[in-house]
Image (cartoon, rainbow, N blue to C red):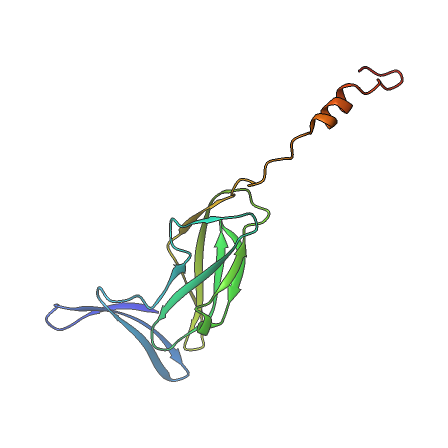
Length: 166
């Protein structure tokens, strides 16, 4: 349940998210202008980052902030609204890898979504701001081999195939 309160002088406000656990009342208090009870931020890749190469692996990492009494279950990652992976490992900053195959070069937008529980009851979720990266493919550095004079001569002086045109 979510409620808002003010002090007796009406100078400060708090948002209180509370639940009953048996006969106990448990609460997560957020002061006005304070941090939300649950938040996630994509910290890698950087917004606007450019990566090169077909098949490049990009690390997706998130930073999660949660109120006292919340337990983070997992962080899910989405690219263009499509699920690409999840992590429940806080020690690795909820890292997963995304490989840009079979995607063509272009812009790709990612969002992280954190799922947490408040005092073992209901699930809570929050999503990050989107992060967009650009994937480029470097041109092939080696040009195709050129034909030698012998290969050109053999090709142009070859007899026509039977019934074919030369």
